[in-house]
Amino acid sequence: MKSDTGNVKAGYFHLGHIEKFFAKADLQDAFQVISNRTFKDLDLEDVFRFIDRTQSRIGQQYLYYLLRCIPPNGKRSGQMEDRVNVFLQNPDMRAFVSTELSKLSEPGAYHVCSLFQGKHIEAPAWLWLIQALSGISVLLILLSFFFPQLWVVLILVFPINMGIHYWNKTNIYQYSSSIPQLVLMNQVARKILANNESQHLTNITASVDSLRRLIPQMSIFRIEAKLQSEIGQLVDYFLELIKAMLLLESVVLFATLKKLDSKREDIATVFKFIGETDAALSVIALRESIPYYCSITPEEDNKTLSVKGIYHPLLFNGVSNDIVLKDKSALLTGSNMSGKTTFIRTVGISAILGQTLNTCFASEFAMPWMQVLSSIRISDDLLEDKSYYMEEVLTLKQLIEESQGKKRTLFSLDEVFKGTNSIERIAMSKSVLSYLADNGNLVFVSTHDRELTGLLSEHYELYHFTEVIQEEEIVFDYKIKPGVLNTTNAIRILELNKFPTQIIDEAMEVSLRLGQNR
Image 1 (cartoon, rainbow, N blue to C red):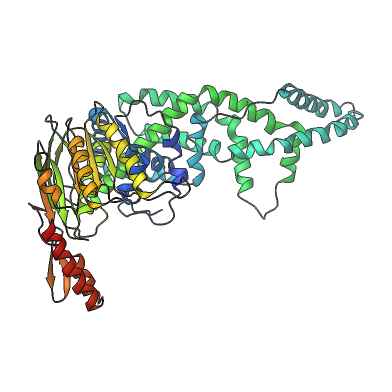
Image 2: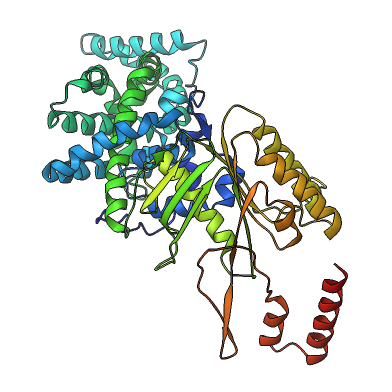
């Protein structure tokens, strides 16, 4: 991880661990949970890699959760900005907190969330026997100093205890990362709270104090974690012998899990505090590293969207664009590679981040609170025996069902019904796009079918992207323009890539003839 929070992180992102908290979080109150399809369509995994400036693994998990969940009516944005402003007004506190959070950068911290989200190992029905053997072993050791013959009994009991001790090792290993990191998380939270006098953190302080009382009995897990990390070195045999003889690990494990089970709410509270704090610092670092940003301006009008200077966060020195929609959606035409789909993704990305992290990649962004759904990347599924067309039909059906709900929706679509013939494609596209544009929804859709521009003019504003041919090269300006594009470049691209003249001439002739027929 980079020590400079202003830099993008390098190295491998273990998304399976990062999304662990989000996967089991309570999402019932969310306005929208970003679907896997939209997450993929808008390249949000790459966007997450770019915006992630967190210092801790817990903060990284929480930032991912924030990105995937749009809260109801901007509920989160006020709390986020309060934390951001505190750190901006106190640089020393920001530096101190960043240093403390970096202590939770070990991969083991990814598993802390399982202590309050997952189900703990159940104690065996014969736990009483483990406790009895542990007590008997302690008693035999004490009495053997007065009655040496009891060492014989202890030697007979020892193999049984040793078997139970190593049977329990698998259970210990499952918690050898999470519990030590829980202890560390609580210590970090306590230090951060000690430097923060905010009255609203009282409940967090209570949770930290509650967990702090468990630290002594959890120390055995910290020792086990240390031993695990010293593979290849001599293990402290004496310590291991004592633990096996007295069954310390087995007794402490199940006693600790029982108490942790009753402290789930406290663990979740401290986890959320660390996560929110780190996420706020990450947002500050992100904003400081980009050319400019803005917050969403809420619009009461269902179908109003006004954007100025919007840019794609993953394009270095990318071109910015403006667009204003009033009571209509947007139909984009344009040449291949001219930027239609990238612009659609650009709007979708800022619409999501504006509602989740209060940060849009634009100078102005005004729209109503909306869920964001998409259909951009579609492929056939051989394992499920689904053709491209059938996969597209099922995806659009799902979007249509979503459009019938009470939530206003921003749809990001790329060339619907590409998997069928032109006449039916145009007919179906017209009817589906008209339907989606109703009920206060906004649609951003690209198409190569110019016939749709006339059929959809009632519901859609028309825009296009185009190119210029300069010295046998196609040059794009990536600027959105009003109106319909009346030229194409597909055959020209073949020509510039040195396809045989016979192919180019015939393609031009057939294209001209088909155009006249239409």
